[in-house]
Length: 166
Length: 166
Length: 166
Image: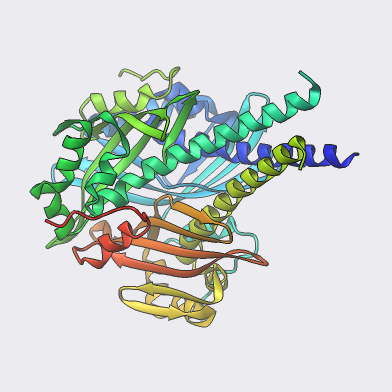
């Protein structure tokens, strides 16, 4: 390969990595506005056809269960009462056609006493490049209420990280 | 056009798109630290000269009204009492010299009983490339307290999204 | 320098700037998941060997004090009780081998009465490129409870910004 060809190929690969992370960030950031407005099909479409969303309280697999959660009366009551599934920026680790991401979410709920933080949650996403773009293969959420699984989930994103055990 | 020229032009265009989104992200993320420190001129300067900031409680048009809001005794009382206009990461859709973005904000206020979430709000930005960089043409904020406008605003950023109507 | 060489060099420099900001963003976003899971060595490793973390309540210098804070019984109690050091997206200003960033953090704590916002804080990071990547030289946190230092810290990230003084 010529020097010029090497430089061009290297730049194209670097651009692709930046664009991949940008696309993954947008996928993750789409969840909140879509779920808080009850766009059931588009929420489901963030996952692969048989993708998994594993939350403390509920385990969903596949587009049918994901969109069903959005249409459920429980979820519709959050929307009609006022709710924000506020997401922080994801920390993404890209590995070719796969990626993982860690982020936090806050479920903010409107109540007669004003807005309250109902839950602060650790999120871990596993994603894959598909013919139609990046999709979630699995998303795992664990509430940060002191249960050990939640800090374990946060640390698992960083391969060399070791939790101090008091 | 030669093959080489095509590859170079394609990379330059991809770089520009990444830089455009980066610049827009910085513009949006500048709002909170500037408004929470009362930098009235710089807050106004995020908008075009006749730009609009349409909030539930107040409608502002142009640099004079925007900077006036920051100097108002109501806003200055937020600063002196302790306040964070906490913004989540924006989801940006770029279209040449125009762009839209959706994000969430939390107004966190210091009170005698500690910090409280005064408002969780859906934000939609419309932006334009100007000779001096990207500027906001219009920003629309709707509080997520159950009013229909707010989830409508969130969904409007995603052209194909359809809200489930129970 | 030939036209071609100039175009290539310009693109390589633009790519590097985008990658630098991406790496700095990841460094900053690593703090919360590492500290909320008690990964003491990895938290310290975000800073240079003699880096400073200056918080209202505590001043730390060097890896020993940083990792010691994570291992402290006070911090371990936050983890075992349930805690999120929720960070907003950073606004980064890059200047060659140095950079500064401003962002907000919310300390969300699980209590018998549910999750509460214990603190909303202004963060300013000073970072340096080192042989092993970007590291924090100094991070300054000031709680947004009305003290003047906090809006001053927010404004200091924007060289031309001027605070309105009522």
